[in-house]
Image (cartoon, rainbow, N blue to C red; front, side):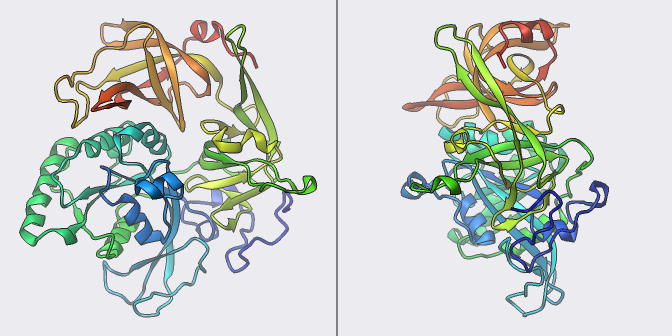
Amino acid sequence: MADSLGTLPLTPMYLSQQPFLKPEELHPTHPDVISRQATINIGTIGHVAHGKSTLVKAITGITTGRFHSEMERNITIKLGYANAKIFRCPKCPEPHNYFPTSSSMPDNSKCKMCGSVGTLVRHVSFVDCPGHDFYMATMLTGACVMDAALLLIAADQPCPQSQTKEHLAAIDIAGITKADRVIIVQNKIDLIKEQEAKSHHQQIVNYLNISLKTKNPYIIPTSAVSGYNVDLVLHHIVNKLPIPTRDLTLPPLFMVIRSFDVNKPGYDIDNIRGGVAGGTLLQGMFKLGDTVEIRPGYTVMNEKTGKCSCYPLITKIISIKADENELRYAIPGGLIAIGTFIDPSYTRQDRLVGSVIGYPGHMPPIRLNITIYYELMHQLISAVNTNNTKIAVLAVNEVILFTIGSNSVSGTIKAVRTVNGAEKIADVVMSKPICAKTGEQIAISRKIATGASRSWRLIGWGKIQDNADWENLNSTEA
């Protein structure tokens, strides 16, 4: 195990050994950082079967659908992840002079077209979101970690489809569209004729003029299956997407998206390893040896009283990995895994998803009761429900799904009121404790029948407000 000073060598040995630098000296494109860690999270969004996972595989070589049910049905159900380095070739002509490799490839990788040694310019993580409306709640948890997005629109279907619209609304809530961080990809261009492609291109333009209020948007025609124009997508990732601003001097906050037990059945008790949390840093930086707190931590419901008790966990970071690359420290952006000393039963089967990790004494509060300012959309975004698309107001005692960071938690509306004749305020009792700061953005979903099934559908957004009296009423026991 590497100690807190990071004196032991990191594997792979041929990548940067990450000599420790001051936080103010590091940035998302620093060579010692992007040699091992992705520093930008890019979501792939759009309607079901529009080629999101196929494009990610074309860039990274990784199939993000790894679960049996996903492979059997050929759809994305859980959030998929894949990393890639992007190199600039010094000899190939613009804009086709970019090529990808896996995260663990050397920093002097060669261009496959001309054999020239490329310059490493970006290291990115792709967050592959499910496109089916039934898994909209999963997509919302992915939107919270995105710095930018690739919006895929299949050329062989009319534009827009229902999930195209709903996914755009979701990233708008996350603040991505406001910063012009969306790349439009017209995929499956190989399935239609030239005139049809031009007509479909105009459909996309007309839609984006309204939804993104963007005139003459740049749209990349691609065929992810054949790899056509994938290099142009890389060109836009490097040259069009802004490098996120990161403040590494702030106390770190890490959002848990996955958690798991890496021990296999039959492990000797002396060789059992602690639980692992996967996710992304929102601010600050983590180092090997850091003492951290996990909130809300271990949660227990008292069946007799109905009260919820939570026990924050204190542990130490003993390993940091990005894909197969060991890290001495990690900065915001990119998806990483943190190894700890905690009992792996706490992290098994995503039990810590939605938790926040940071330094003790510098964490957001644990809340069971929350007060929110909210706004509802005027109509439901759905292709199936056409008879009654108007969204009803929130009702007292109604159960609503709230997506707060990577946490999707149901809550019961206890009071609804209007302040100053305009602001809509609701008091909510959550079904389990959450760790969230005042002002944190949330997505609001309601269970709505779409065809023969009922699923959580996006109906609005909001922000957590201060309300000490309500928060302290029947609060969690910790």
